[in-house]
Length: 143
Image 1: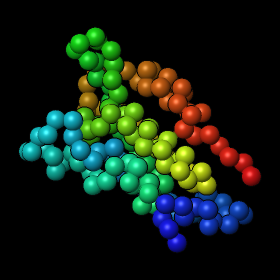
Image 2 (image 1 turned 180 degrees about the vertical axis):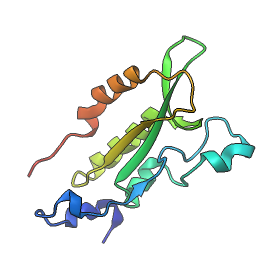
Image 3 (image 1 turned 30 degrees about the vertical axis):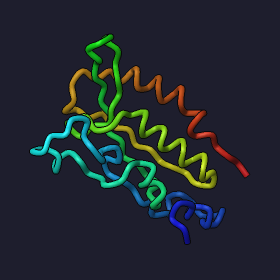
């Protein structure tokens, strides 16, 4: 069985509660925004991008998000975070979108958590981004 589309082999009568789903803790923490050697081992939790994690069979993503203001125009940017900023939040969303377009039989479960150690967070803006992208990324297919 290939890992990128393993869910297509689940019998239709199987309930989600009866499945064991492979997941990824701090899925967006596979690199840091600013390379800090001293803390890298405490910040980076994954060796693969979110797209690569999904291709390898992961279907539950724990994504920690923080907002920070750009100095140039005072706009809020959203990043994945594990105390320190890791990768842009939209990079993770784009990875999920690409995977879902290539593998329409699969389902990805997302758990969004705020990174309380990060500063300057504005989660209302994040909610708007998720709402705008929901249909483009998570278009349900019903047989």
